[in-house]
Image 1: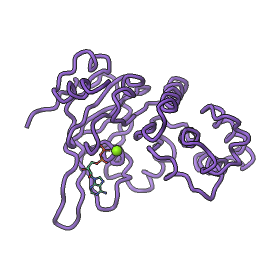
Image 2: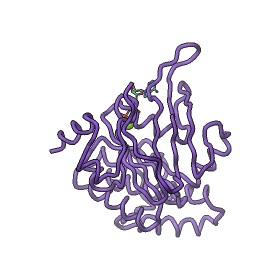
Image 3: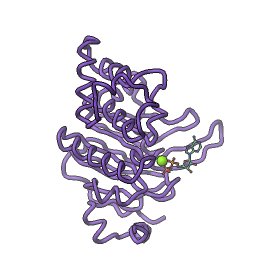
Image 4: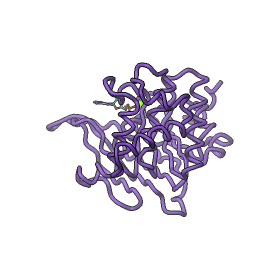
Length: 269
Ligand code: ADP
Ligand code: MG
């Protein structure tokens, strides 16, 4: 088997370090691996893009980090968050990590928003699950969070239901919910894929702005090399469940080493 083209281990301590993580689906005596020894790291304040075509194992890898995998999956390897091992950590600890240190947003916000609750209700719940504040204070904070993600008319939007928002506005609401816990790491799985091209650019601008303002780390998953060029400091390329190359974004665009990366870049219009 060919070795992945990895960089030397980062000099600074990584916030997130995934080492040799494999995920298998199945049950009983029949298990099938869909990712193989995935290794990647995200430094404090860094934006890392995880790229690769559909089915390459990007989402499975993202879900493995916080153990959000379906019940018919199992993971092996090591996942260190600020040095703390998350593989084998109890559900109680993982819940704490999910509510505080790491936030996750997905491609289609509609699946994560409950249609019977207003945007304000979602935000108040997210705020109060993180911090012990009064409902009134959380309501004030909810409007403030919407303002920070540049939601138009935030005072009105808190009273709206998810279906009353546009796709881009729903994604902004999801990002506001993610920011409620002031995460140290934001994992965004194809956050712009379901959106129109102009709205995609706005959402990427927002992610970059929030990253710069808060200093959080971002792991952004995408199959779009344009997204990578816009936001990533570093890039990790996956193919068929394996990391084939990782490099600083500038270097990867200038001198892609793996032939698969070269092919991905050649396909960019
Ligand atoms: P990507 O996000 O890169 O498009 P995924 O991580 O979603 O790819 O999927 C990687 C592989 O894992 C695919 O072959 C997919 O069919 C498989 N897979 C994903 N979810 C499941 C599941 N719940 N059960 C079985 N196989 C799955
Ligand atoms: Mg995916």
